[in-house]
Length: 473
Image 1 (spheres, rainbow, N blue to C red):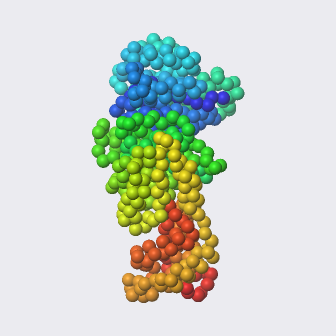
Image 2 (image 1 turned 90 degrees about the vertical axis):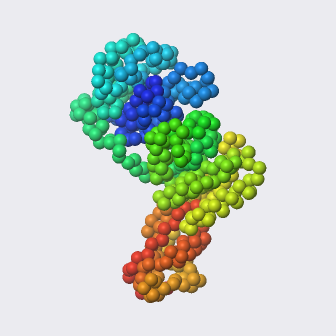
Image 3 (image 1 turned 120 degrees about the vertical axis):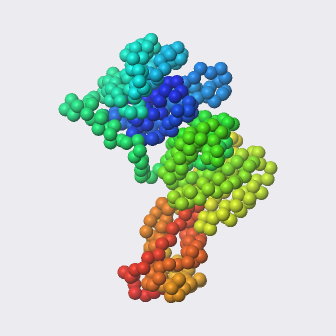
């Protein structure tokens, strides 16, 4: 049974567009700027009962310096080829200079891989006539498609199934099924790239965010013990949001490396906008975010904006001060970061601040232990009895003020009405417009009582009769 299929080719031939088309969602950033994809991105795909991992790779280039970013990108792509059962060799029909593709055709032949040759951008006027030039690459007749518009993709799907069957005779297609072309066409239409990928499971979804060049990719490589992410001193190396999965203390963690968020692009403004949107989308899909700060630089307004956004969408938050090996006074830096966070937000308290060195791999266990702790707090459930005993004590200690209508607020009871993050509703017998200052008091009190640190807490008020008791607190 096939396990992996990779899409390879020169930069800007449409690999990420085809990747998104097959996956049925916008998983990879697409842009006319060459070299947007720099890491190997993979996602599980199922076509007509055939399950496999689809890999989107960086553009293959002829490089002189193997230690350059281009050299690292090419090396990652070659490794992806070696891991794959089938390789989709994507070419550009609008530019069929086979001299540019021949070096990479030789790599594929050397690796003795099953290759599906594809000519992309058939929607460009006159490009279809160039398909005959591709026979020179030695992989037979190319499949002609437009990944952007979905033209000819059905033919590619059929070929994937045919080659899969050749690789493993156990893969069978039910002859009684509907026409394969009709079924695959339905699959394309039902998986709109704009649909949201709402994932509900028990895995911890962790996004690593921060400004460029603070060490996010180095951190992930250290955590997963792999050089999956390309690491470079050049800011903006990561442009896609890349997922990796590993297990820590029997907990499955999906960790996402995101593009660095900065004020202005030094490369291309529209490309930068795509990267930032991808980062904020990753935050929305995460359970917990780890904001990485360069300890030699400190925290700034952009970091605070990221914290505020993560809090607004209900994420658990951990602040990580990286590059401890280069910090002269760690305590001073930690105090400065803590002071700025506490003085910038009223409702965000007790955020864990951890100092590590991703490069030297120090402090990683402390970070992962904190991730498990924050995730537990994020999905905490507290019984109604415990909550009402707490509320009674809280009200005695600090009675609620008069409402805006100058009426005394009477709390009947409290119950938990949501998790991830925890949400509580207090039912009142009178006005339900507690002042912000008193809401803050209750949130801090419930946080301290039940040790709910590192996650947002929501408290709502609702006017209602108490079904359990007629006695006011």
